[in-house]
Length: 147
Image 1 (spheres, rainbow, N blue to C red):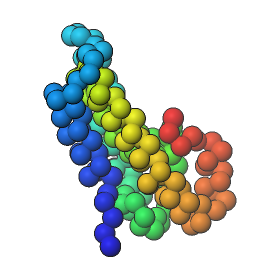
Image 2: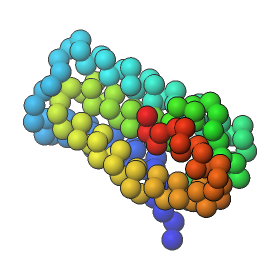
Image 3: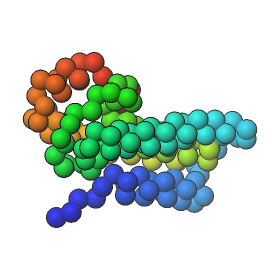
Image 4: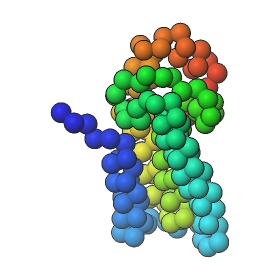
């Protein structure tokens, strides 16, 4: 059975942010020009995802969850966070929530981060621990899961 991949959850979450903002905004937290601050996490998130994807290609290993990794990547952005792509997608969603400025999209960003952690990160890190036992243990001591 084919699993739903993280980008599917990510794009569904973006659509949900916009739907909630326009249908159930609850409370407008930020006004213009403060909403433009959302461009910062949005840009950082995009950069994290692009750089991470290039790192996977550079090291010739899979980017897809639950496929066996041939290399444990610990350089580049992986020195800052063990999960730069999940962090990047969550930051993009946080940026979207800030740009929209209403309360409900922030809940979606939080839920997406929790969903990524439970559905993907925990299982992926378990796999990496089995494939690269000592190397992954040392890596976890140096680098946090998120930030």
